Structures are given as structure tokens and as C-alpha cells.
Length: 314
Ligand SMILES: NC(=O)c1ccc[n+]([C@@H]2O[C@H](COP(=O)([O-])OP(=O)(O)OC[C@H]3O[C@@H](n4cnc5c(N)ncnc54)[C@H](O)[C@@H]3O)[C@@H](O)[C@H]2O)c1
Image 1: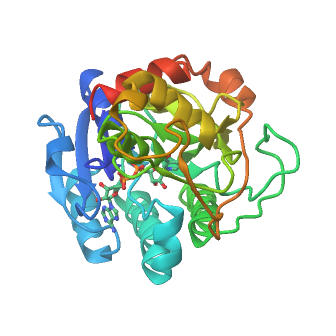
Image 2: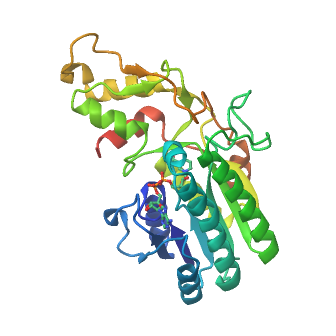
């Protein structure tokens, strides 16, 4: 089956591409390499260096490739980048998504054993805003507090709207904090790279800010299961457990023997602290019971193991 993956030169989707190729699918990658890298591209996938904001280019690609499924990960994908580049965020995450939905609706085609389907990477960590009760279920009201979260909320709505109007299936994943090899821009690689050099990283807040961390292999597995299951569904992925910034620091510290490396004077076992940042929620974890029911998905790689595997690659 032919699957067009956007953002396939980036962190998460490059792993998904690898798994799709391994499973014997024909994979087309569309990526403008703005935050992705050629070295992440699977050599067996066909690559278009192209921008999803460019409707005529998307039309040309979809008309030619006629994919059965789209797995859409290309995005401005960081809260802080979305605050600094708000127009680019909506152009990419909203208009870019609409461009793909329109061209897929027009030119995508079902194939033996598979119906047309659009898989969308949304953000469980930002779309809910700050929930009162944790872990959060998919059914609570959405209240994003960053342009990034809002762009994912609006993106989800366009996916549902065009899925229904064109009659293709959709599956929306609300991701937790995903971590693992090839990630360069989130807290774990940022902390680990500094700490490996003996430099203290900065925690924004008092260390109690918390996220639900899920290893990339588990996230890629959900994207494999989603090819056959999950029709017009919105599913949280995650452990349902909060991991604090301080715990991230302490886990990396233990793994890399930070105390022996530290070059700075003063207490060695503490990070640096700075004020909380605007646009970031305090704590979240996602209830993925529905993903278990619908897909048979459950995360497997525990935090310490995932951190160990990630650090080996940094
Ligand atoms: N990493 C996480 O923890 C996390 C959590 C929730 C949701 N997500 C979502 O998962 C997806 C992938 O995130 P990631 O962490 O792998 O980020 P990433 O930045 O590594 O990957 C995004 C990819 O999209 C490409 N891209 C960006 N704008 C584009 C455009 N206009 N046209 C074509 N390609 C473009 C980039 O070059 C990059 O390769 C995003 O949609 C993100 O919002 C990620």
C-alpha cells in the first residue's frame, strides 16, 4: 500500500517511515527540511523536498502518487517556536493541513484491502490546556494556551471536516511528550547534551512541571496499528503518568554519572532554575485507555530504559 508521510525527515515521522518500509509499504516522504534532516530519510522511501504550504506543489505530488493513506506529521512543532512565529505556525499547521486534505480528498485512492485514510499527529500535551484532573481523557473540553496548541485544535477540526465531506477515514493521535533517538529539540536531548559536557541544564519553574513521556518505538507502533484499526477516532497516547522535570534531570544524571563530569562550583546535584515560560502548562498526563480498546495499543518501554537507549545515541 502507498503511504505519503509528511515530516518524514523529522524526529517522529522518520521512525514511522522506517516501520512502514519494514512492513513492506511503499512510502513517499514530503518534507521541506526546515527542522528535519536528510540523514533521517529512509533510503527506500521516495523523497519530495517540498513545502505543504504550497498548494500547487501538493496537487502535483498527490495527482502523480495517488496515495491510499496520508500520515501527516509536518508541522511547526514546538510551543516556543509557535509563540515566536505565529503566522508561520498557522500557515503550516492549519493551511498546510488543509492543502493536504483537499489534495488527498481529490487524488488519493483506496487499494486492495485498504480504504483511504488520513492519520494526523496532534498534541495531547497542549490541546487540553491545563486539565483539572490527570490523566486526561479525550472527552474533556479543549482549552489550548499556546498558538501551537490552538493550531493543533484547528488542525483536528479540518481533518474531521474534510474526512467527512470527502468520505475518507481519519485517525487523530494526541501525543504525549515523545522522546528517543533523532530528537534534537526537546528537553531530554537538550539536558543530556549539556550534562554530558558537565554543564548544568536550566529547568523552567521549580522542577515540579510534569509531562507524560513516551518512547518513540511505542509511538511508531501506534502508527502501524492505525493503518488497520481506528476509524474516525481521536486517541490519546501515553502512560497516564506524570514525570517531573526534576525526575528527567535525576534520571539522566544517574545514567551518565553527571556528578563526576561537572565542571561548575557549588552543589553538583541540582540543575539551574529559571522562571516558568508563557504558553507552557504546568502538569499533564494522558489517559490512553481508548487507544488500548480500539487499537490494542499500550506503551512498553519504561522511562529509565528509554532514557538509556536515547543517551546511547547522543
Ligand atoms: N515530539 C513530540 O513530543 C510531539 C508531541 C506532540 C505532537 N507532536 C507532533 O508530531 C509531529 C512531528 O514532531 P517532531 O517532534 O518529529 O518534529 P520535527 O520538527 O522533528 O519534525 C517535523 C518535520 O516537519 C517538517 N516540516 C515543517 N514544516 C514543513 C512544511 N511547511 N512543509 C514540509 N515539511 C515541513 C520539518 O522539516 C521536520 O522534518 C508534529 O506534527 C508535532 O506537532 C510531537
